Amino acid sequence: MSKVIMIQGTMSNVGKSLIVAALCRILKQDGYSVAPFKSQNMALNSFITKEGLEIGRAQAMQCEAAGIEPSALMNPILLKPTNEIGSQVILNGKAIGNYSAKEYFEKKKSFLPEIQKAYETLQKQYDVIIIEGAGSPAEINLKQNDIVNMGIAELFNAPVLLVGDIDRGGVFAQIVGTIMLLEQKEQNKVKGFIINKFRGDVTLLQSGITFLEQKCCKKVLGVVPYVTVDIEEEDSLTERFSKKTEKAIINIAVIHLPHISNFTDFNRLEAIQGVSVYYVKRVEQLEYADMIVLPGTKNTIEDLLYIRQQGLESAIIKLAEKGVIVFGICGGYQMMGEVIVDEYGAENKGSIKAMGLLPIYTVFQKHKTMTRVEGKFLNISGDLKALSGKRFYGYEIHMGETKIKGDNYICEMIQNNKNIRKDGIVNQNCYGSYVHGIFDEEETAKALLKALCDKKGIESEKLLENTVNWQLYKQKQYDILAETVRNSLDMKAFYNILNGEE
Image (cartoon, one colour):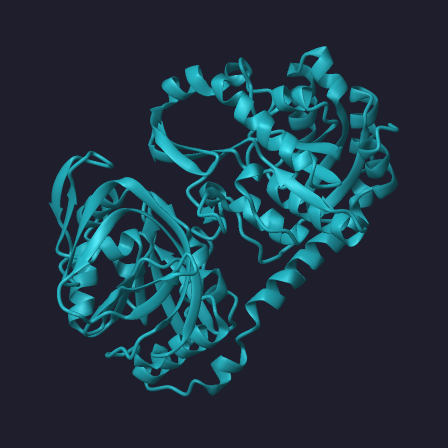
């Protein structure tokens, strides 16, 4: 049976997911087979496994760090918020319905056997399981029937490392307060602390570390510096949406929808020097966009109404009429059509007029399409004709089926290694597709940037030199993260805790 350790946090966004990813990488480097596990995640960024099952993107990222194939076993419950008080519940990779917060709270304990089954299956396959908690274990209102923090630590007899975030201030109060709010048996589960996101001279923190260790009678395993690595973040807490971006050679405006999902579609482009990918909430931010992207969303109709109310829809239509390239992905693709029909109440029962940029219409279905795909761009017309023939690898995840008027398809793909079908459409300078990850391949990214440079009338050679092998680039980021964490932690103490010796 595998060894286990659990990473919990004093609150959300303390860096649990990246600490887990770093430890997965370190253990892999040290010769262990290791898997991440999060019993319940809440996120709109999701991932489709080879089996066509849906899990949180963070667990897929941690699997990448560990060098293993993602599985629904690693995230048996995924909650995808549909509004302020409800979520779509994904159990073992498949949607089982929409629940209000109260309904889910009353029902969640019944999912425990599925969580236990998933964990026990992983135990037979890996040397080490690293469990990630959610939020804080000291949320008094959520502790009853807990299935993600101390309840899981108790169930699987996992020692706990508690992570605090010093960057936002109050890390000593975070850690001491959390410990004080835990029951004695829960306190006993916590074997040490990690102080995360530190900036400055760590020696100046020594008095605080001494205080923590004396007050709580537990060891501080290390202080991890604030590290800048290009690794996927939890969607609701990302800093990507708020970071300031300077005007660059090529500027790609992504509409920041309220329920934006899978914006990892643009991480590959963000990594290219000379390209600015920025998230837009106001009309004036579109002023210098070379391409506008309508991204994926969990609530297509509600988000379409939002951009309509904000004046973004009319601004995008006007810019499209002036020749600016507009590209829709998944929910954004649906928005660009003529009408969206929701017969079964998947979102908002009824129909709504869409943007009219593409000759398509979408009808929401009862079932959810979830599949990995690979394919190539067809011989397409318009400003992005440079994409013709370029390959892509990605995935689809959507409730709707879209009908295309005419035959201006933009890509052909293989689904489930067998079904060949066409997807997406071009209408002058407007494009759309259901494929997430459509720009991730190096040659595809280069072709897109060349097309944007050509349209702008500027040389593309220097910009294209800045593109990188995306897979090698990501692996390097994991190595940087792992090296930083390894050098910051008392790894002997970590292994002692993992081996039950401390």
